[in-house]
Image 1 (spheres, one colour):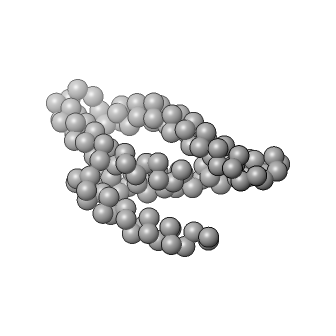
Image 2 (cartoon, rainbow, N blue to C red):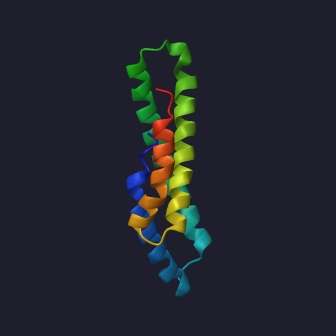
Image 3 (cartoon, one colour):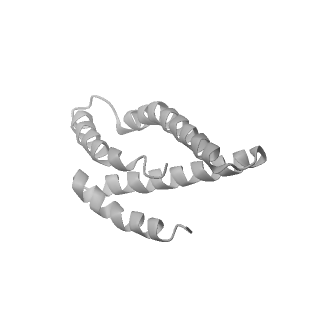
Length: 115
């Protein structure tokens, strides 16, 4: 679930380039694009993360009383990694550069994940 946003970083950078060209021509404001992305992408992302979290819970074999705890923590991890990847995409100028920026965070959390 935490790596779900990783392959989307090059696309975010490409969208940013189009958005900057369109806003420079006064077609719309940056806030309109941010709001549109929030309204469209956020429910889809949360739904897919919730679905994946439910599948993860089904594989754990935990009692049903722990469902909301496991899914809640999994969604929290998803939103944290999504925010990190979006920050990396905002800083980087190319998709390859964004992936290079994100690699140390991934290595750190993959090495020390508690397993």
